[in-house]
Figure 1 (spheres, rainbow, N blue to C red):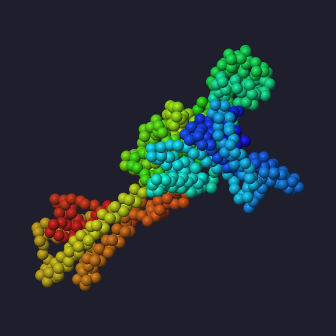
Figure 2: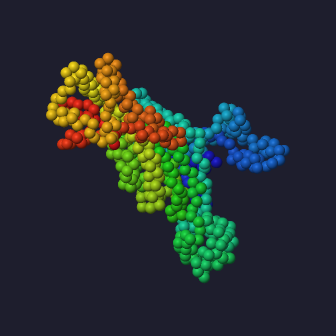
Figure 3: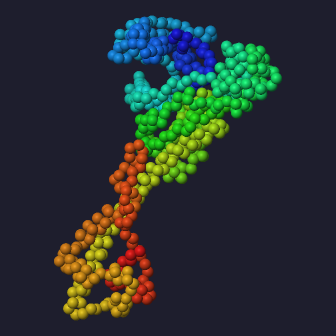
Length: 587
């Protein structure tokens, strides 16, 4: 089976559609062709695996309720080519094959094919290929491909070693350890959807079908068609079609009519189902990006399954900020059926949506200065590649474009909630820093005023009250005049005497005022934000944390108001100074 699997090009046949990793239908055979073209050296394959028939028997054993039958089937499950070692099933033999290909006859040329006992209980497949290329020119592309492959396959361990025989210092080694133990489920093969067929495909299906009637052909060989909708479809086809007619009787003209009606009768059958696809998953995508990029923050999203031209697709996206070796601006990383796309990125739908359809500023993100990573993975039974190289997906398919946009917007909304809290914490720290900066000057000035008041109070006690200006003499004469609120704020003689007595005794100093101001800043700087500056912005599960309680009530507003012309409206002055009068205003 190994020679036919790798040594014969275009040998497969499709009876349905399925999400595949290849681009050109060659798969691993491309490695053999490349080796044949560049060096001519055959490839070496080493493999040992569990028989598929054994797995089928294992499933059958699980569904059987008879204990005796289970024991018999378990012995059969081990089988001739499999055995159980250490609780896991391994193959009994290891196959080694040295293979070449006859490109003219399209046939495998087996140089060596041996089978040996699997004494080391080894399981897996190993392929050795010798190819020629310009390492200096394409080194960056190889490294880029491996990095992106590590992102999209976090469940795999990747390692690459390059050794330079002439200069050992130029050698390099890359290793990406496995980050996840959860592999995506295998993609399922499904039948062709009616809206995705063409004349050639319908003719192939008609040749292979076992159905004896046209109704059976529609319901058995195509997906999404029920017997009732099949009969309604045949009615639309016209008088040349009958429900009981043999599908083999359709000629080219009838096939053309048949295809036209199939592609236009969307109301008769269901849309393609995305359950047959195998996306990576948000969990694995998050782990892969964290493993390779190491961003400061990341958000992932998956859009609902969609369809175009009868082919289902699923879009997964992630947006990251910061990271190791990240560049300023938007960096787009693209995947199609979990394969990295390196070239022609400017014309890709992911790049155009990220650069032209997303308003980054509305999500608190600066798309020119921030280090933004955009990751878009599209899986489908038929990826709509553009160009002969199949290196980008065009933005002309509106369904895919809108799905990519929705997924990226979902990611940005998650980031906005985080960045809003992060910016609020930053503003708190900046406000606290500004307040603490002026505390020494404020405490020194306040203490100087209190000292002057204490000195003047002592002089007044000896020689009577004195005023330094006519305005303050008028204010002194109008003492006691004002609103009830201002009267309430006016300190009593005992309070004034107590404060000045503490200044005189040395209990109230510049340092104590400074300490109290620092305490006030610490207590009130976070008021109204709902969280502490040392608190994590996001808790477990990405949920934001917030404190309960009305801390807004503890805040005290401070107002600067002008000095009125009429001294009587100025209220009761608490602190008098040659340059200003200070009094509280309870707003």
